[in-house]
Image 1 (cartoon, rainbow, N blue to C red):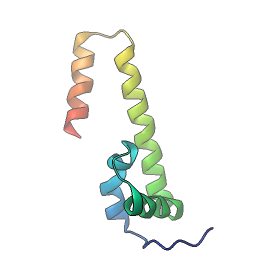
Image 2: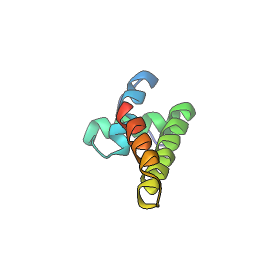
Image 3: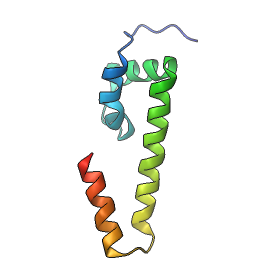
Image 4: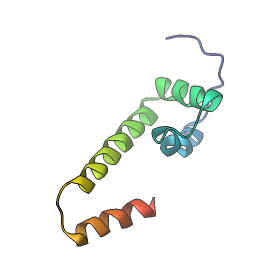
Length: 81
């Protein structure tokens, strides 16, 4: 594993950044710290991978034909996050 000059953030801090990371809304030092943490922490890495997969599948639902009720329900769930 490479040595990093970045501080190792806590799991709590990493989990606060998960969605910003997935949506590419964090940059520079914050991004490097986050990536260093998930490189070391299997739990947080798994959470990131789960959220990426969930987001991908939810986006795919938008392109498939589905009932209006289902589309509204998925949008409501997303809005709750």
